[in-house]
Image 1 (cartoon, helix red, strand yellow):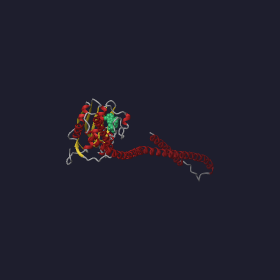
Image 2: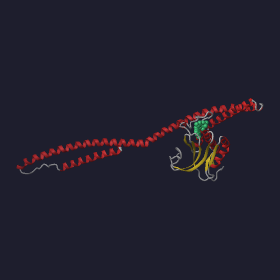
Image 3: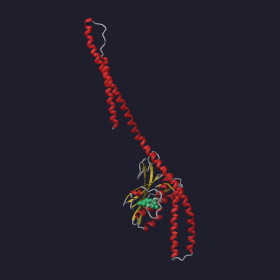
Image 4: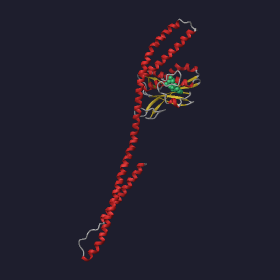
Length: 357
Ligand code: ADP
């Protein structure tokens, strides 16, 4: 809008200057010429009107030149303003987003560096804890053998054993978070992956009256590390079950198709190249409590948990594993309705000569 207005003003100034120049040229065309001949009687009679016309002409020309100067100055100012506005618009359009991207990248690098430092520290501590923990566990087993079953001492030893297992799980999580292993990729069908998770967790879910619905095609292939993906899905399904508590449904399903660059099936998934990417999406949907805004803001922060016995590492580890597979972990949630976590993975062509499971 501002540019159009400025261009209008420049046009007006240019047009007026052009008119003034034409008038000046016309004036020059009608400038009275001094006549060197004629009768003596008529000479004094024609000189006077000629002088008056000459004065008029000079006055007119001076006025026109002055106006032209003003117009030129206005034109220069307008061109400068126009140039400045156009430059700032280009800057805002091109440089603004680049600057925002730079700030975001710096924040990500800062976060990665912090995570790396935290990871190294956590890995060191976890490693030191694991050795004495193993020794305690071995001794406990020895002691337990000598205790009479159903005695209160045996019961104490059982509780101690359970707590040692819990500590071992936490230490394992911390180590995995701190030093994620490189995925060993093989081609699997989404159906086989889902069925394995159902075999592992089905009984536990049944106890809480939670139904696990699985819908996947035997022809849909993905290239993943199956052990790592078992862990991702177990984390997501366990979170879903904890959010439901008692009575509800968890659904595992897949979708696939092209995703345009910059467009997300849920949030922010981008294709690596410029073309539409083929993706396979594995979804874990629950009919649980949903995730409140305040929790969403810290959802993927390591060690953030709302549970008494949680480690706050489940989602961080899951997201890390998925990212190592070139994918993204996304979610959609509605408080009191439930949550869907979506693992967005690059799709693969037909599977021919690979190890298939
Ligand atoms: P943890 O399960 O040990 O708390 P996570 O990283 O797996 O750690 O999860 C972090 C937090 O995210 C959980 O404490 C919980 O508040 C929230 N959360 C994760 N998944 C869900 C879900 N499906 N529904 C509701 N809240 C969830």
